[in-house]
Image (cartoon, rainbow, N blue to C red):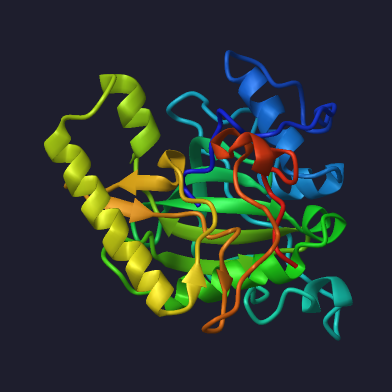
Length: 278
């Protein structure tokens, strides 16, 4: 999740909400880009970011950061718009007494936006993938979205970016994982190449985790440098299981999916980024 590519993300044009005051400062353009990726319903964005109380992502030191919460749910019984995403995304508009404060934007992809947040209760930093429900239903990827969480809960491997938590608010789905500040593509871009010894280590760790997944009947289907994070010791953490799928022995998937820039010419003509198996 934490490695959704900003370089390859798709942006949707839209006008920023005006309610809550004008956004000032050098981060205004970043805020507008973030809003555009969070969905098309303005009221949902205002609830999520609490724009009436916060004017900017990065403000003066004495002013608090935005809080990642949505308004409580009051409907009963549970509306269909909520029930569709259960049980993988339990109703949790406010995570108990915890508050997740937004520290910054990590990345933006075709399926959602990844935020760097501070959990004030645990005093730890996490990455949270925020996906608008309306986008999931419009693209008919409900099954894939739920399977992403189900698969990550099943996995326990040192070279996999493990799932921390998942929940839903009124308009968004939230998937939280530990935060890694570096991915393999960013490191490769910064240093201009890897020595052979490092490549051997990265290849060995990647083969180990892929063999582990295949033994469990799971195919990732979007392995790329941007989806390989690095922990503080330099070991791999495979992330972003948004296109992953379980397969029974001997069966196969036929939909061409993954990231367009990593496909061959023949494959690119038949599918592209975000084409998930249904």
